[in-house]
Image 1 (cartoon, rainbow over the protein chains, first blue to last red):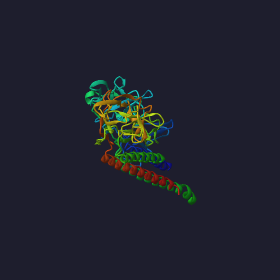
Image 2: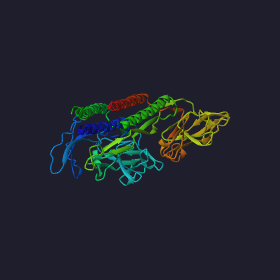
Image 3: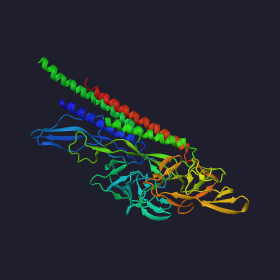
Image 4: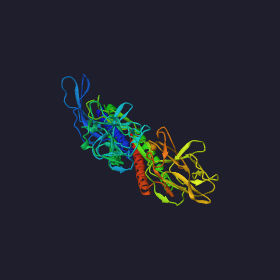
Length: 269
Length: 261
């Protein structure tokens, strides 16, 4: 009986997390190079045996959000073992292309296809699609926060002169190549996670692969806008809100049933 | 739930600053030498959370991250060339290309400006419209009849009574910066260097990557009204979106409050 309460609570928490993620996507609808975070609700099998809570992650991916989840407990093996379906939320980063906006600044760079800039801040390596760069006081290409943009041989120092960046990532000053931007790609970029400041970090075990020069399609004087879609996000947020309200109703209903069992059954007995 | 609210609040604040920047650009659409600013946004810190219903969570291919909204990282000034107007006044100058005029401010520091609408003060010093002297100071002799400024910044005059000898009286110096976006705005069309901008490189016009001087012309602002108005509409809509988020979060909180009657 308490299970009804528990699953309604889980479902409400998930819709809450979804709303928080969606709110952040909407807040960043104008942030350069921002990649929205998707929310997927999955059903997950959880097994609890008397040995303690062991979770298996044999998920059934992509179940619709509407399902209340929590199918009744099934099979019991030796000892006490409960198998249980629970809802869970996943949040991969959506790496799809944002629209390009012309700025005319020579240090603004944008990708037209796949690829990420490699930057280093405080000795840590990060990746970004936000090419709103500037020269720091030592004429090194850097992000507004001071993270240094990496070329193939470390930070890129730009000598005095007219800067031009080729579609392949070659950096030229006055027609002479002075370096090459280090452009990377990931097999599964959805696993990257945001660290703020329009930077993404790779989790352990996920490695960046240099992107072949003929696959890099850079444009100079343009910036990539956020790929957060205000319409889809708004719709998802309203859906999350309504699901939250439904789950609240389920919780209240479970509570009412519990009330009957505890207070009224005992009276009649 | 509250996080959704604070994210949305940060979004509204950011869009407000965006509107402030845009309206300042529009207000300065006719200011000589004004360079438009563009508000640049970045996402705020993220919290990596392990949601309910999961144990260690390490088997999951993606983690759940909840951001805290958006922040303004800077108002980038765009140094593209502004509109050019012809004035036929030889003391009006514009820089064709990179560089700034140097002016000395009342407190003795040197400021930098693209506004080349110079005038002569009572002592016949070359000064800006606000009365700041050009640096190094340039004094035009009292008996000068005709002033002309060459593309390299040489100021020459004809003296009264002698219409055949052109005399060079001064040389205008220009300055440029490694990172002009790092200059701070003092107001009154004057910019000041900062640690981010780097040290000024001072030279003659037309040398060391500096632009040439065109006398008799003024550089107006580089603000494009259509672009600014479109930006303003986008900013307003983004502001509205974020306020809707607050409504949604508020409704959800109300749902929670009604759980227990």
